[in-house]
Image (cartoon, rainbow, N blue to C red; front, side, top):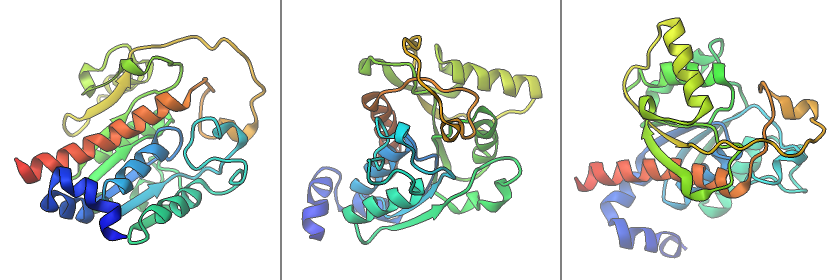
Length: 246
């Protein structure tokens, strides 16, 4: 089973890169439409030490785009449902679940210095900004996903350094927030983003659970959130590969 699981990965990257992927410690904040796909990509690629952080439970509105969200899992804790799936892929993986909100008040509960990679897939502007500020002041490599809602064109997804992200309202709001508060990330970092911003053409009743830690609800689609998540995963794989191969 070990060979069946990893042989295609090792064939491409080599045993030394695969060994390093087994070793790195990754913490992922947010396991919704973007984060859930990122987690799957990481484990399928050989990452075996992964901490999942999300306080929410699966709701019916998650089923259209979140990896572990099905009719059967509605009501379950997101991180626990995702962990169950990931262990079906690699039973050797160490998947730690933290059903918590990352915020200025709770940041001290997360040992960010203990990770090789910190991945941001948080929706909340305030909490996302806090994670960026704290995460970029650790030795870890930091990657972030900007807003994935209101998009349909998969060819528009791209990667850029945070201060070079254009056309993304979330990125613009974060830069404005940092400038107003005179607080700055500890170093430059790359983001997954998309310049396309479409209007919501429909209207739906919004449940209280859907508004968890969010200012508003926007429409989003599985193919876009999955591309965002897999691209975020890809940044980790690429970084490990480059550091080992050179």
